[in-house]
Length: 248
Image (cartoon, rainbow, N blue to C red; front, top):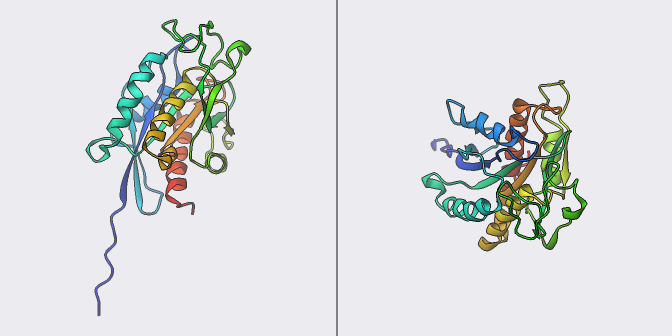
């Protein structure tokens, strides 16, 4: 009698998470609050519900400054580290940022140019418009993107539906409010998404499926950190399932 087939160990996948620090009206940025909650876990946070894969979340250890020049220097560096996934790099990246009050927004597109809103250093690459509001759409003078449209390769509609149909909010016991969006804003949220999508493009079209961006609501405005963390876990699961073709 032939021996039973050996079961292959699951493939290891690492997903980098980033979040932003304070700016404008946002004294405590929940995007990094969610990342920090994963960073503070005594054991690595993993997802083991995808057949054939074990996914480990890799939280970037500090909040990103809300500054264009830091994104310009840091994101290419992080993508260089991604090439060394076996030595501590990563396979996918999910950037987080704070959006408007209400639910979560899973972004699909960023713009190449048009970033006119001043950052925390008073600088903007494409103009000099004073920042007010949260992510810039409140300011008509600086809300329009320019240049090429940059799209993630992920099926954001499917991933959004996966999250919307399965994550229950801690605050009210209802399924979370999350929508697919094509407007990440013309501030640092859109800018970091743009930066990662441009790095992905340099490496080939398939790499566009390794980049995602999630807007989370301000702290205490409907959802808190714990619910945000559950949404992030399900978004990450959806990213890997979509890319690997494991939707069941």
